[in-house]
Length: 285
Image (cartoon, rainbow, N blue to C red):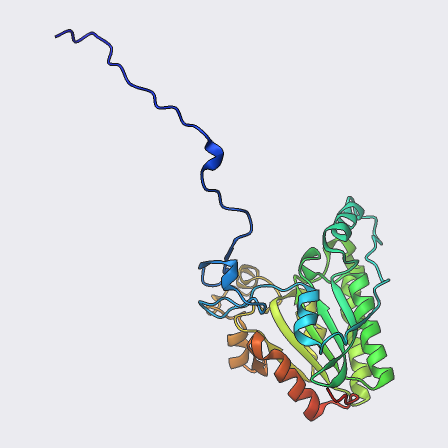
């Protein structure tokens, strides 16, 4: 036997690679809380994880559709646009891209609507616009919403979602905390109801101001709620913090949240609270 002979192999050609199965983009969704991956058809319009019950993030338009009665939502303040008061480098380019990608001029949507037949001012913050950060435009829109509600004797329902103050606007962003808080106080002095719903995430200056100044504070399940990050706090106070201390469930246990409400039950809960406490116009459906 010739051990130096080269062994021959047959080559099998592969034809029509395009016929192999492919998975289109966007078919699957991963829950950031439990880590389970699911087909998008398994997720209802409420966008709730079927495994652990945590909530996926909603766009402002989706939130309005789930909350307002029918087509009752009338937006105002849409002409208030984010600007670059400090001439921060490349911030204008970022804003222009966001206008095209999201169709929004700020991270907050405000308007009047009916919720369970009761007229109210509805404010929704959207994390798709620079993580719902608080800038001059957001502060102006929310202030306008509380002022209009005060003038018209209407309750306010605000869905908070934010990464905090917007760094590109520096101290101008921080000033919005006091500006909106002042409008909240004037609305409260008229004896009007303010309900805030904390969604994932609500952090930074929004948590430190108007999100926690409501008469009634609700939250969605497993929402991240806090001011600074856990590592920053631990390094500052030099103490180990308890597990999950920035969750909605932990805040409920320690009295910072009045009730955790499933997204499927949110509209019914808001309508009941408005009927009991609100002084808005009643509209028979």
